[in-house]
Image 1 (spheres, one colour):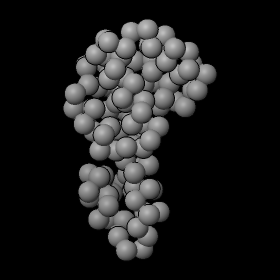
Image 2: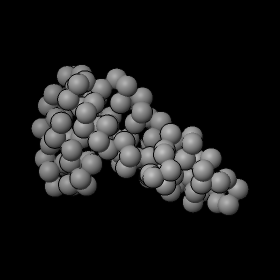
Image 3: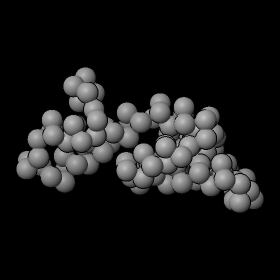
Length: 103
């Protein structure tokens, strides 16, 4: 959980420390999952994040659900920046399953 939390909070110092500790336990499935989540957050890979969310252990799942709106907003900004003005905001928001309030 510490790895995911540090990535969400952009806490590089603790993330580095936790990654060093996690390296010793790379075979544990929860550690590997957390490392994949960190990668998805850092690369802003929304689809990858959603796939990891579906496979998340219970504690990680709740933490990832809290961060999901942030990932959606980041993806929206990236999509708008790359496709502006050929795609409407409402179309992209629909694809990302965002409500009107989130946009």
